[in-house]
Image (cartoon, rainbow, N blue to C red; front, top):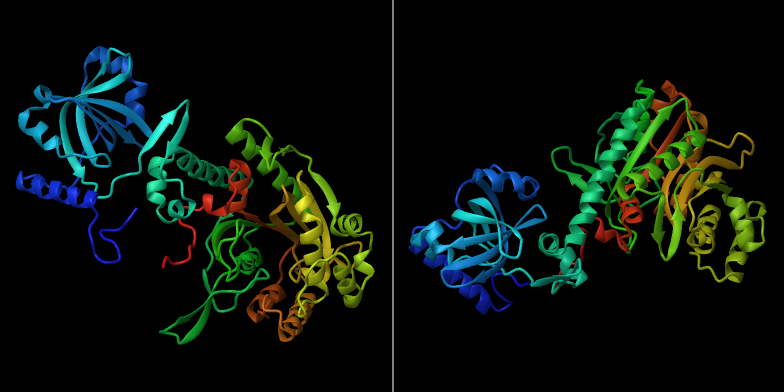
Amino acid sequence: MSSTGDAGGRVSPVLQQRLEKLERLRELGVEPWPVGFTRDTRVVEFLASFAHLKETGEGRRMAGRITALRRMGKATFAELMDGGEKVQLYIQRDGVGADTYDVFKLFDIGDIIGVEGTAFTTRSGEMSVEVRDIRLLSKNLHPLPASKEKDGQVFDEFSDKDQRYRQRYVDLLVNPSTRTVFEQRSRIVSAIRRHLEAQGFLEVETPVLQPIYGGAAARPFVTHHNALDMRLYLRIANELYLKRLIVGGFDRVFEFARDFRNEGMDRFHNPEFTQMECYAAYQDYQDMMVLVETLISGLAVELHGTTRVMLKGHEVELAPPWRRATMMELLREATGEDVLEMDEAGLRALARRLQVEVEPTDGWARIVDTLFGDLVEPRLIQPTFVCDYPREMSPLARRHRDDARLVERFEAVVAGKELCNSFTELNDPIDQRQRFLDQQALMQRGDDEAHPLDEDFLRALETGMPPTAGLGLGIDRLVMLLTGAESIRDVIFFPTMRPQA
């Protein structure tokens, strides 16, 4: 769909025709974009109470968009869409009056209108509205893509993915499946909120602009605050602020956070994304495993009535309990080696042998992570808690109670993709300081995703944080999982796009 003109400023013939109708409407004294309209009934409500309305003859006022027109001289059948629901309109010249009908002749598919009428059934048995009054509420200048529906399937001319992402408003109007995905996304977020609140969690808000970014291994977006003349970062995670609240005495907190990471884009990554992070005092990562498998299986039942979903041609069972396996066990299965006992040189040699590409600046932990991401994660189809990561990979997680080389951390992997990340949180300020210093050494080596040192957060830990478990759940990937979407752009209303030439 074009703008008001092409690169040379030329107006398309269809747009020119609509502009001419616009002028004619104004000549007739009709405001194409009037103020307000009081409707008393939604289309879905009209259809639900159709039998009663037909029997009583009560009039109803509805509003929506014209999605079809079939003119027959002095009478017209039209289709009104409101909130994804449609109803047929029957407009007669004698029913609305000659002047109103002449104005109605200038209406087009895509116009937003208000109608008043009564319920009646056509000869073919279709529930319809016999219109007594009709008025224009918003003139459409760009025609909507034509669409056809057959056997419950919608076929449309607006199928180009790039255009659908750029003009999501049109995509939502002509593709019911798109609307369904986002309605389900809203239900998922609402259900998560209810689940956590029922367990005593308090929803909070933390800063998006941060003087020190942290809480994840990622490159930040950088900005500048003019009044304070200081550099600020868009948050890559909200973890460190939520743990400050645990220190402050809020024992259970959660936040739906917009996070920003200045990294690549693909089917599973968008620079701007949504996470839900929650923290619970006096719990550990084992408790969070129970929360995750209970929450996600419950969401599947709420959306689909079952814990079984189809993903990548596999039937995935989301019912608890999920498989639990350590990262080292899974890597040993994939490589035949105990990578925990290998030094960096040995890991590099292993990566070369297995044809896994690593960067010269990668340290021991980054190489382990790359091996796991290439050789193990894509093969984990059924829900799996990957547990007990090497300490170097997780600067914010508590040392494992049985092996100081590891930390108490898990990632939940479903259908080959990480869904969430959880720690028994590190609350030892001395250990945390050393972990930050180790990260500084990686940063000096060239690791642009290493974690910066945060003195204020260390001060908070020195004040005293109780034993705590934390969880970060990717909302976009969760919605992909539960709706079967193939790209993260399909579950974000307005994904980041490369500028058009």
